[in-house]
Length: 99
Image: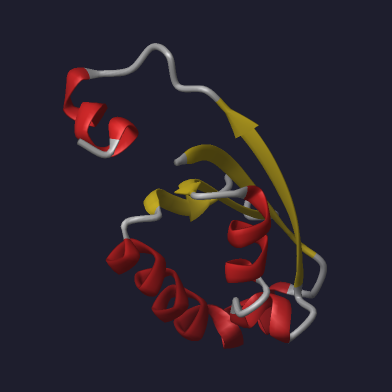
């Protein structure tokens, strides 16, 4: 598995973001259930969000996020940054290595 920081930047007013937020969080749960997402939440100030993710490939992760309600509503843009978590807390070992 490859590891990523996904940066979401809102491109719509917060009223639109708030309207889509429940569906977005429900969508994210499918990523958690799949084992692809480790953590997610809004930035402060609230200009977007950050997600720590893993996936077999960047293309598969990008394809997954095309189904995000924010994307469907054209309310956000996405930046995918691949990284190699060589240093980590022991509690992350299983998630990072897939063991």
